[in-house]
Image (cartoon, rainbow, N blue to C red; front, side, top):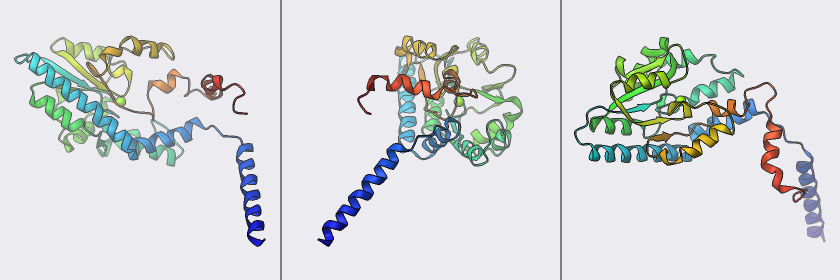
Length: 265
Ligand SMILES: [Mg+2]
């Protein structure tokens, strides 16, 4: 009898707590909760690490194929972005969450430390491309004043061809196309790697135009374009207007949950 009463009490407690969970309204805080999850993913998730290795394994395969196809071609170039492509800045993102701050606060100080660790697979891939005679160019939107610290950070981890002429910092525009064109005057850019579409080609527009463009270029991914994961920041949240004061989170979710109808009420 006592046992039966105990289970009844436990069952009531469970039902009560379930009701409470169902009644509590979810709170959407895209500017902090989402960044927290994304930052933890980019630092701790083995899946993040695996995605990076996957990207750079494909990149290795591609340069190997290209060298086999053009054994004597000397002007083939690989262009890589820096942040979240070859260097991981998730500790900086963590700091902004901890301080309830945001980019660009403390960004320069973080870069000056030259403490960012390499993205998994990046050093190995670039050293391999270097060994096969490819030119390596680093095209970044870090500002010019951070060039020395960036060189220090890259050299610390033995990235190849880290010289003044192989690093293109941001000067007047964040659009990387003019810098790619400058490189193309002398070299044939055969492979590009980045975490943001603008690292690969002149990407314009917002959702869904950006996505349509990617679909039209689908045969180039893993061939000419290598993409690294970065859920923390980039052009994609701006493309969804997530950086605006009144982020349309509810309406964005509604699009995804439309098919449920009344099925889950
Ligand atoms: Mg980047």
